[in-house]
Length: 306
Image 1 (cartoon, helix red, strand yellow):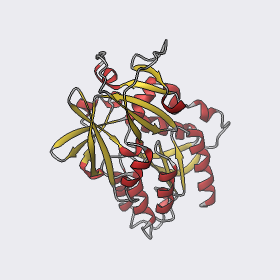
Image 2 (cartoon, helix red, strand yellow; image 1 turned 60 degrees about the horizontal axis):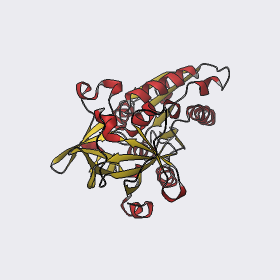
Image 3 (cartoon, one colour; image 1 turned 180 degrees about the horizontal axis):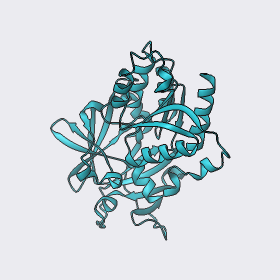
Image 4 (cartoon, helix red, strand yellow; image 1 turned 120 degrees about the horizontal axis):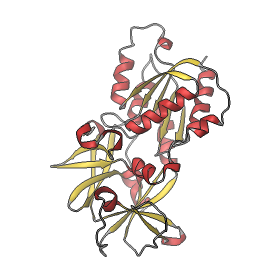
């Protein structure tokens, strides 16, 4: 599936739906958000790279672009399989990176609601170490949605949030602003909260999805002064139960909450996603892992909203 073919199935903004591409590894069903997929290619010979992560198969060069290939069966199972000619490469784009993932087959695409995706039990996902971001019911099948950002962050830690960026901002004053954050990744949620605290934003409240953040906002409806509990909202896009686009739409369509600054902080900030976020009223949008940029944007939005 090439980029131009994918445009025909991109969803309308704020519907709280997701297109899941289902693929198999040893006959087990896994899924990836179609928005992360650039294309699917037949597997090709790969040039090994010395001193790389065990799951990094190497590099290959389709159409004059060098791509890193991650052996997803090896990453998930820890053992090397015989590479088969019918294996496929799913070429992904997120966090401003293009990476190929080896899989065995691609089954198809299902459109489902984020409300039909459940967070896996901690006993299954192993807490912060787990790479299952959700379990989806696609027709009669249960599909494990993989956390591809977590996989890449483990393979190449330098691609994830770096606290050193906050140090480069210099001395910071403590802020009394109340910031709400919707982020389903346990690891990234902890890192974002740590970065905000380090930046002087000590009054943070973290939510594992957009639905729980929205329920919190609704609990504040009778308050005359919302600033005692919320000054600004940060949201990821991909989350079980309610995604960030739907959350943004609810906030900006609501008479009491529409003045709240909303920042979309996601690995999926492409031109198409930026257009969608703007249509929904997001005040700012930026790609992970630009944590220092996030902090400066928060500074600016809070200054403007005074």
